[in-house]
Image 1 (cartoon, rainbow, N blue to C red):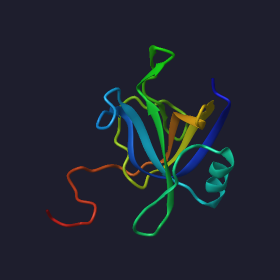
Image 2: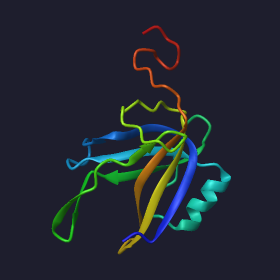
Image 3: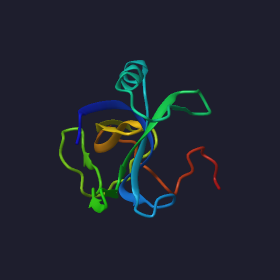
Image 4: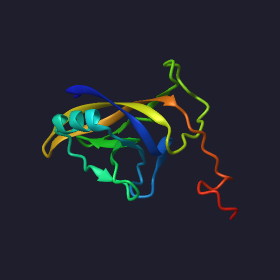
Length: 145
C-alpha cells in the first residue's frame, strides 16, 4: 500500500521505461537514473528511501535510480505491474516509445511504502519536460567510429 507520492525533477540517463530490462532480473525491471539538485536531494534524503545515492564520474553529480518491477511476487502471487506511465510536458500519454536520450529533463513520480527493510519505492510515471533525442547512429563524443 502506497504511503506517499513524491516527485523528483532532473536530468536523466539510461531511461528504460518502455521495455523492462531482464539482465539481472528475469521478471524485468523498468528504471531511470535521475540527477538531483540540492532541493531534490534534500527531499530524497528526508523521504528515507532505501536507495543508494550514486555520483557520476565526470563531475560528481548525485543521482538515484528509480525502478519499477514488471512483475512482482507478493504474498505468493505474481502481480503484473506493467510499465510506468510516460507523459509529454503537457501531460499527454506517450505511446510511440520515443527513445529518451541522456540529458533529457524529466519529472518522476514515485510512490513510497513501508517494508521490513525500511521505505521502499515504485516508479509510477515519467514526464518528459525537455527531450534530448537519442540517436543510436551518432556517437555522443563526436568520434567517427
